[in-house]
Amino acid sequence: MRKTLPVISTGPAAGTASGGCSATAAAPARSALPLWRKRRLRIALVRHHDLCLNTRQIARVQKRAGVLPHLGLGYIHTALKTAGFHHVIQVDTPALGLDSEGLRRLLADFGPDLVGVSTTTPGLPGAVEACEAAKSTGAKVILGGPHTEVYAHENLVHDCIDYIGVGEGITIMPELAEAMERGEDPEGIRGLVTRKHDGGAAPMVNLEEVGWPERSGLPMDRYYSIMAPRPFATMISSRGCPFKCSFCFKQAVDKKSMYRSPEDVVGEMTELKERWGVKEIMFYDDVFTLHRGRVREICALIGERGLKVRWEAPTRVDLVPEPLLKAMAGAGCVRLRFGIEHGDSEILQRMRKESDLEKIEKAVTDAHDAGIKGFGYFIVGWLDETREQFRRTVDLACRLPLDYASFYTATPLPGTPLHTESVAAGRIPPDYWDRFVRGEFDARIGYLVPDAQERAQRAYRSFFMRRSMVKPLLTHMAVTGQWRNTLDGLRSLHRSTSNTDRDF
Image (tube, rainbow, N blue to C red; front, side, top):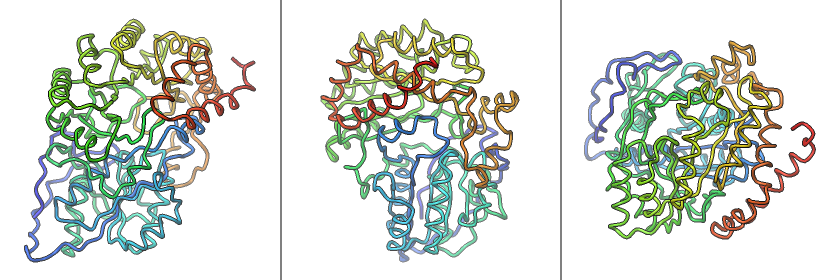
């Protein structure tokens, strides 16, 4: 029988999805399979292409940024193995270079009984392609990921989708697989939505009890980041974020913080180094330094074990005191990714960032002084952003001791305060995302200022084409070996912005 995974309560609202999924009673107890019976169900976990018309990043930049493993599917794979399902594969089409027909052929050769596809809302068109490919093999298909909490029932307009997973796929998938193997109706599984049943949302699971994400069978040599030397890997050491930035969509499971122990984190880092030869690890926590005492323990344990591996992590400018920065640098941290977002105080307040320019400058400068490179995330083209406010963002990015920067165009994702404000201002159709989910839109959601894309391009060029960036870029390419991707990215930025100087 499957080991029951401990869940972390997200409070009274944990079982209620924002798209109308109602809370339900706990799933009924199911009879155990006889010990002599082997689990023969064949399961495929799929991530299809991520590039889409609603990307917040400039397409030319995104194509060269890299291909990162899908940690969520890795954790689901581990949970399925724990439940006794060993005929499981992960299919990562961006890493394998497969189009929809290639995916269909691969799945047809494998012959799955159940296929799980993960998606975000902007990436839904690619996910539907994957579901269609899976359905053509005769498999049952479940769609999951952060997108489904807002649009659970709406996704079922696509005939190729049998089930929707809302919330924690780590518990939903083993429960569904067990029901299918027994030939039982899956009704009653918490977090499973069908055309007849609403299973609410499955609550958060303690990742430390699940085990490390399964990486065997993945094309580890195909993953790369323009920021890191190969081979590299990604990890999660904590989940959840208590902050309420107005552009960020959060699932119910994201609203409760969960931390892995320092021993478990450093254990996985050690395995990545020793088994896979990883040279750099990219942490994908929401806020790595939210629990600063735990980070200090992680750094101390890295030192005690003599682990030599580069790593980077995301954080906030108000959560990196100088002593912590020094400890992180001494433990191998080479880069911190700061969500700076904007250079104008008024827009920072409207973004609900809870930061100010003084905190931003101090944090980035302190990290630089500690020997940690800074990566700044910025959003341009905010609702009613003036040219002067945009210039302040570019000026701030160029003034800070940052080695890298990324400039996103403001995109009102469903379920966010920015979306509500943009609809109220008449900048986007109120039903855009509903119709997008149903496949009725083939055009990008409108920008919040007419020249938002040009502003992003100009910001990139202003930041990277400075004379002072020559040495950092050459050093970066020498350390990471990312010569071609970096140079191609710079050339594309130059071409895409050279004809719009007069608009600045």
